[in-house]
Length: 442
Image 1 (cartoon, rainbow, N blue to C red):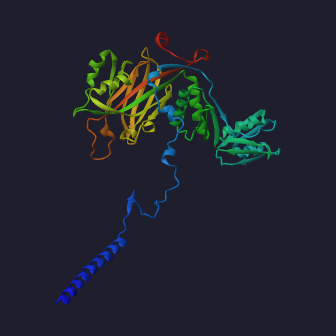
Image 2: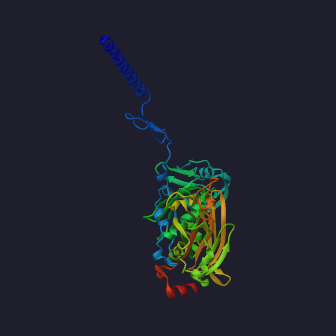
């Protein structure tokens, strides 16, 4: 009896151990089949592996693409040391063509006529009795006609190249004149950096891209064809003949009302006084207020703080030659990625006589990649500021729903500046007080 009891106990313990062993084996199998893995940004890694990333195309990274030496100059405004009128010296702006090669031999040309000939053919006919050959690096298609009574070889070649809208360079070692449809130039800029940015923006507005700017030497190198040269020469000639450059310093805010109500902008009248609100200009969207210098970034922020919270989205400056057009890209100087970084502020303006008054006559356009959002024609006195209000933040929302309050809006503060170009003896100062009043009354 006792022996049977011991046998049963042994069998029971054996069954328990078998179950435990089976459970251990099963857990071990499960552990082998289902290893713990981590998923990091769609990249699967385990304890012994390294991250595996998909191959990317050979493209410039975003941070490298956005690198620009002029951003610190464009994206910073010293509101505590701003001058509405600055006087700078008149300086010669010179365009020099690069890669012109060696000087041509000192030969004379007389009684030479060419009619409806390609430039290469006309030059070969001219040089047939010399050791100079003509090489066409780029096909040219213009046919030229003309007569040269008497001239140097250099002047004759330059004339024919200009008529054919091509460029030449001479290689004295091999005795070859090379013809091409594209050229390369250097512009020797004035010393004032605002003037440089105004010219650069005008050039970019004329679709002259890939500009190489040396801020140390104050030079700009660009490439292009005959049409490009004409456009740039026109800009330089126009800037050189003008006596003013316009600039705008800008702050862009997103404003969040503290309550479920929009900001009451009419409260600016009792807050600042009617004399400090010069004009009210409605747009398709929003409204532009022309205000006195009493309303600046500090006083505007204090006014808004009583009704709403505000965040600085972007800050910067841009300039235009008098009568030209330029733009300010919010995202280029954005403090961080926001909805409004798609916004572009464009300005066309000139300073001068406006119905018997000296005014800045400007057109300000707000646009995005989807097109124009609103525009305002603003005549203002030197020293006045602009406050653009009522641009709903929802205008930049691309999703059907958003967490942003329907009363959140964009506020743009713009402060125009005038740069007067004068003789070198009278330059180099900021005008204020009686000097400023005397300048504005001239």
